[in-house]
View 1: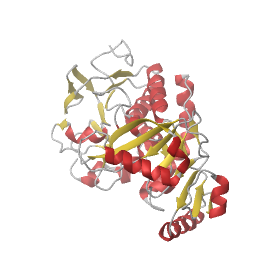
View 2 (view 1 turned 135 degrees about the vertical axis):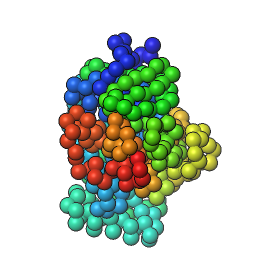
View 3 (view 1 turned 30 degrees about the vertical axis):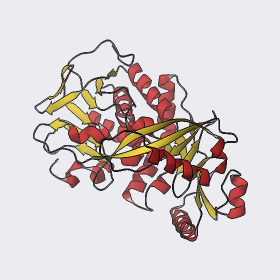
Length: 378
């Protein structure tokens, strides 16, 4: 039996969650906290898919276009992070490295400078605390920056969270609330009825609600009378560097990479965007691209130790928005997938909205823009 599992496994439960990435684990915690009996099924250990290759950057004002739906969702979720994480840490009795000291985005040419100026003006109009820096000011706030920098933009609400520790804490906190995690469990198909039946290689689990949070693999799952969910895998490679001294002061974002420092002397460098199907291999080209970009951005990283290369497959929807909400064709099925590059950032909001919907029927406005029906007869 996995070390993640409780021992009181039963065949019938209130909710079955398919997928134990950061989204699935956050859902398990929120719903177990509401008193629901929850089982999480995954063919891997929790967090072993796309989540383990995430740098944990919390930066909605960089990841999304100004005033876009994605930006609005990201900002809402970022506002939940402090309270969400404090609950998880308290229940798990485990610290999770987490900072909200802003991001520094830099420009190295005229085009980049124009882009930073546009972003700065847009953020000022939105009332976001930010500062446009000259070359000299960038070097003052970040002495490690490379020689090509022309300007910088500090966005103060941004931050980062250590994803591996976050997933571990979510699992422990959910276990405290009596959730059950079943890893090494392959889901074969989902059938409908008053209670859904989730057929796995470890038996059939029944529940009034099944949540599809299987990330890039969601489209491979057999769903009775429902087309495959339209998500595709997009590979991201990430470098984990160790023994970095001195450390960058905060997350530094350049044109070709971003660097996330942690107090233990590590820096995460991400991330490639590769449309290569379900290929999870690290490649020489990916490592070379990230290493060169990181060295240009922060030349001091040349002396860092390459600890490992992490690879994850992000679940990308056709419009790059999450797919969250009830299935029209299979009422017992709820989707929570398609978060692409923003699964960690959007985990608190997704978990809260879906848990409220499942436990009390409350329909948050988020569900209007993330509804599966926008992408077909799901």
